[in-house]
Length: 187
Image (tube, rainbow, N blue to C red):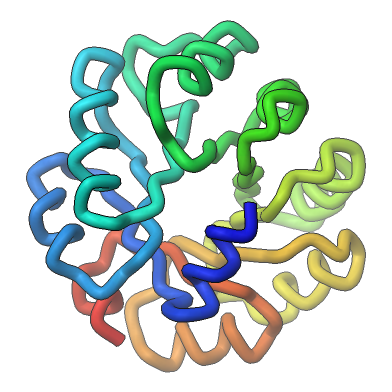
């Protein structure tokens, strides 16, 4: 679990892959951590292997992998057969299963309004993931609020395009920024 925090302390920018054609670009990037947001169960092992062979830590967003069900069996399969470093999910039940298996787990929250914020904070308090990813990531006051309410490390993602966005997220207390924007990978 310390690997994730050590890696982001060296480089707080996380490369998010939403197109498998970008794998070689991610490998060449200075990012140490990768969020895999696409793929299917047929190519997952090979993609994770390739990224890990290049020295990257790989966290798979299980909700977005085609052919993978969103249940406990899927998490157990990933833990046993795919050598990933952890998972990302919006599902509280999957957070609990991953934690039981001692997988590093990032719970993703979409903060669209106050109701989503309150619901998300309550979910985090109940599941206690290793980290939380907030989308969109350009809301410094919300970042501060989630951190103060949950005391869980926050990652921001979504709509981060400029250096100022990265700086604002980090100043608000985020430990890292995830982005599919290649320009930001090199900041």
